[in-house]
Image (cartoon, rainbow, N blue to C red; front, side):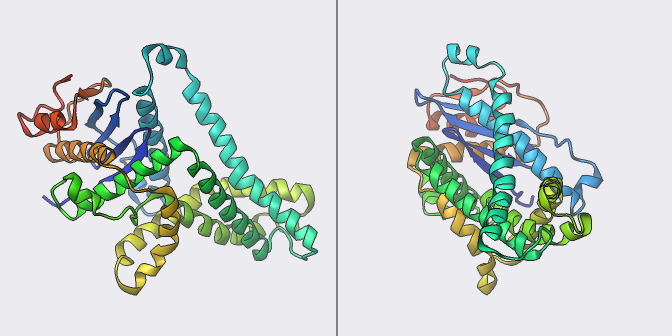
Length: 337
């Protein structure tokens, strides 16, 4: 059987791994035990239309956001007491709504405002539909993105998240090289990976500059002033699915054709940003990434379609996890304490 692609995401004190047929999340609890949520996964975007170039990028983005939020919510719950869980209520949904608004304001509206303010202050004769104006927007978006990453990286909890991000990448590298998934084998791998979501965001910024430059003159010719600003903002928000689709296809091509030789230079901009969002993990964090990967690879091999429920499997230690996994193969059928 050909080796399947497995991708991942760092979560709070843990790692999510996604294989074609399953989804697993491994989290280190405050008491040192490992909580594992694993089970088969069937995409809601399985129709042929959503597998075509262009459409599959949109499906990937929506699916990744949905899975990512669910994994983050699970990992956060593992750090809470029963009393804290009872008080949480629907605060998670409200947090997603607020964070979406903040993201639109920070990375869509603010760069446009700064570009307009700069062009006016400098006395530059560029209109809202000029390519130079969209390059200016993209430049400010890039600066804001870099500043945002550096700012949040100073937060200790985010620093640990970036360590788990590094552990995720290292484990995927070891898996793709078909090495035994030991802490020693994983730790010597790179924290940088071509398929990283951070690289995807960099590609999104580049595509947004090009697409905005092409779409604005066609959709809002001769529109200026505050009405033009509002129209341009609406266009840029409306273009987000198309931008994501194109960025996804470009990243797929770069992963396929640009991983060796001089062509690897195309990956360097993304790697530079990954140097901010990934850090060297400790051995305990690598163990969590290995647990998520081994569970994902195990279920993907057996192609088991039986659900395991929402309750996490709790292991007293990483060694106990491996005993269950390599013993009677009952990982998805029991809840060992």
